[in-house]
Image (tube, rainbow, N blue to C red; front, side, top):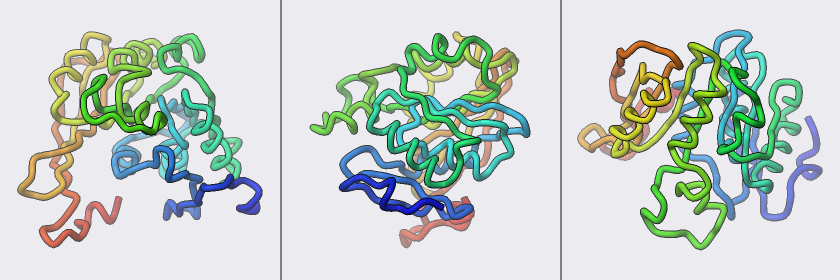
Length: 245
């Protein structure tokens, strides 16, 4: 294990991922991972020998968690913002995962040109949820890019994923339920058929605020809706399932 001080920059911190002793470098001034990334990492299924691409990987949280939880062959993260990509690379080095994870700086809109057709069995993405100016614009550009579709849209993600995925390859995404009609329509239009879905509720009696989706390139229409995941008990404590995740 490398010395922490060798890889940390001013203002950064190391967060314990509570799995395999892994830690991740984050900066409070940039976009830090949230519960959505953790939930997606447990929803994704990676089989032995499969190659995984995480689009818009940020500081690399999904490749690191997926490596810890699955038996895939190799994990690649694509990130547009060099500062975030640099943090992700240093986290990979800190955890000694250079032979399992690679972080590449690049644009999701050019992903197929970067990686080539049918080059991955699995794609994951925790995309910007907000359309254009929807919601308040944050003065922090890094946060704004992470939360709003200013550098890539849902259509960009699905178009490139359809090219990059192998036939019968799997696509995993976490998003907001209010965009489900658009998500399903565009997934089907690009030949990625929605196959599995799980809604995430903050409380049992509250409407869902996240949705986990699995799609299959070239799949036939048939959607399985899993039991909802509830995050909090009424007293604000985590449910047992959430704690297990």
